[in-house]
Length: 157
Image (cartoon, rainbow, N blue to C red; front, top):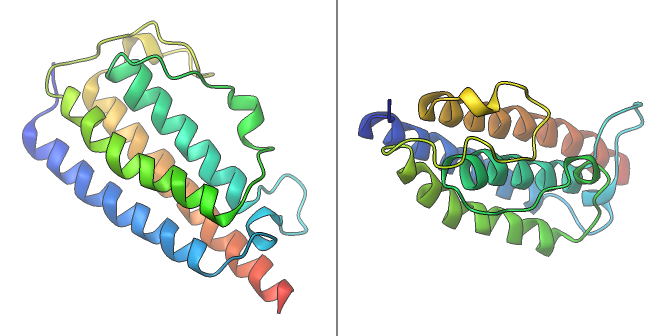
């Protein structure tokens, strides 16, 4: 069953607010701190997290739901490095792409066989589930970015 217009609108509103938060995180970082990880094993950098969010939303919204061919190497997302400007470019692309992908939720899933996730239930996901999962990924990793920023920006002072 396709997602309802109200759910899509709510999703887009919260997604835009969360992307605004990522932009504010990036405001506090430079090209060194965006690539700095807190001194805790397994914690990612803000740049890697932005890259992962771009990959995750690209897979779920673009490849799976909208049927676009968006290549993804999930395992490399967490090792990605780059500049604040490159991170901002990922966020800007998401601001353009996410509404287009979400609009497809009103008609259903276009490519249930898309590859690019470790989840086994992707092929049976509903549009409602995909939108909710995209929002979860976006919000969860934005929180990680905020914590990482708080630690690495303070460490750099």
